[in-house]
Length: 278
Image (cartoon, rainbow, N blue to C red):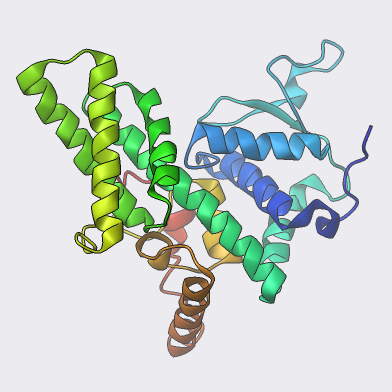
């Protein structure tokens, strides 16, 4: 059996981010990640590193009170890592993430995490749109296939537009033809592919639906944005790339210097809990 990591360095940047996201979600009543699938991926990574244990049923020899349940997902978990004091673990993780170097390896892990989150944010928005129109929320996984089919990247705000338009296409189609669910799902999926191709080609390059503010709802994205990559609106409006990562960091560094170190990007209420942005 593998032993738990001894230090934050052994846990790695991704593991530190995942653990900070879990602890932040528990403390601040936020979703762990944009999607449940991504949340479970993060928790399973921590489980395989022997940092946490997961339910669904606690050991009969342990008191039930030793287990926690995530506020919004209802996932039972227990911290199994004693390398750091539990009460000080979250701020220590956040401080560690802020110190991750901006050299090539550090930027590569930031870019990989941004891409992961971009896919999750787009899928989450698609799921909410499907639910809004009374469609099957599980169809939201089709956006991942559309992203792979596209063969290139567009921004999260552009994917939000694509998802919105595809669901509206499905809603208008059902008014005229009343297709069966499988046929309706194909209509929406085909529209995802069609709209994404037009956006990627530049013909509809300005079509985008950013949220009302740049602060993401999930704990994973919030910790990433505040402590690892201060992207601000670029998180939504730009394609994840090394150049855009560097540009966003320079822009934010300049903005912070102009405000004498008083950040206008992350007000306190951005971390009070999930917002209602769509």
